[in-house]
Length: 412
Image (cartoon, rainbow, N blue to C red; front, side, top):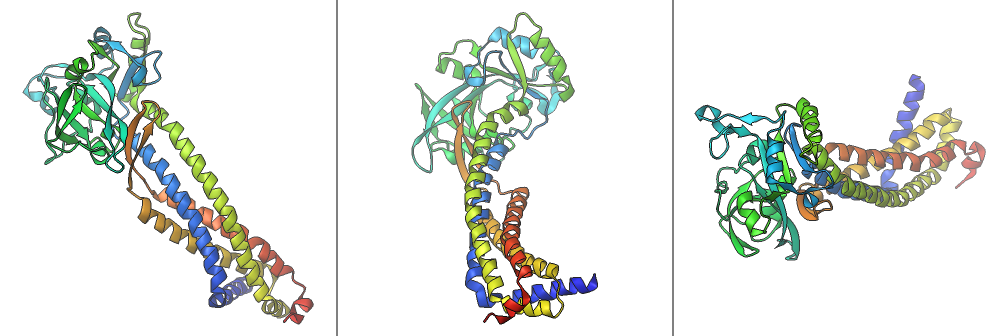
C-alpha cells in the first residue's frame, strides 16, 4: 500500500512539474471550466436572491386571509364586516391597552387584535436604472401592521412613520433603491393626489421592502374602494394556533375565505420564477460544461501523448496501471478545481449583492432584490468543476494505462 501511494504521489508531482511545457492547453481547459462555473453561479444567484426576497424573516405565526376563490391579493376582496370577523377569530394574538403595553400597542394605544386589514394597488414609477415605467406595489395598512409583521421599522435617520389620515407614505428600502422619486422628503403624484415620502423602512430583507405603505383609510377613497379590503394579515398566539384559526374561519357561514401562512404564500409566489431561473441556469451551464468537457479531454489526451515514452518507461520500471490512471485523474481534477475556484470568485465579485428587480407574476408588480452568491451555491458549482475534470481525465487516463510498453518506447 505504501509503495502504491508513493507511486501515485511521484507520478502526480512529475506531471504537475511538466505543466509549464503545456501551459497553453492547461490554461484553455481551466478558462473553459471557470466560464462554466461563473455562468452557473451568476444565473443561480438570481434565483437565490429572489427566493430570499420572497422569504419573510419573521416567525411562522403570521397568517394572510384572502377570499376563498382568490389566487393572490390582487384578485381578493373582503368587506369591512368580514375583516372584523377575521380579526376576532380564535387564535389571533391581542394587544393590551395602557402604558404597560409599551411598543406592542397600536397607534391609538387601545386594546385589540393583532390584525391589519389591507388594500393592495399597483402604481407606475420609473426605474432608476433605465427610466422605464414599472409596476410598483402600494399597500394601505391598518394600525397594527408593524406589530403583525414584527420586523418592519424605520431606522434612525431614515424619517418617521406616516401619520394616519394624511397623504403620507413610507417606502421599503428595496423600492427606494430601485425606483425614481422615492427619496425621503420628496412627493410622488399618484392618481389625483400627491403623497409625501416621510420614511424609508426596513422589512427583514423580504418582499415587503419592495412596497410603498400608507394608511388604508386614506388609500381607499383615493382609489374609490369604498369600505373594501383585499386581505387581512394577522399574528397568531403561536404557530400551533393556525389549525384553530383556520377551522374557525372555514366553518363560519358568514365567511368565504382561505387562511394561509405568510411563509407558504410567499413561497408559492416565488416558486414559478425560481424554477424557471434554475432550469435556465442549469441548461446554459450544461451546454457550456459540454464544451469545457471536450476542452479537458483534449488537454489530458495531449498530456498523455506528450508523456507516452515517459509513461512506458515508468511501467517498464514497475509502476502499476492504477497509479498512472490516478495520477492523470488527479491532474485533471486539480486543473478543474483551480478553474472552478477562479470562476466562482469572479462570479462572487461580479454578482453578489447586485441590485435588481423583477416581476412577481402573482401580483404583476416589481420586486426589488439582490443577487445572492451563497456558500452552498459556490460549493455546488465547484463540485460541477470537479466532475468535469474527473470525466475529462478518465478516458485519457485509461489510454495511458493501456499503452503497450514496447510500442510506446519506440515512439519519438
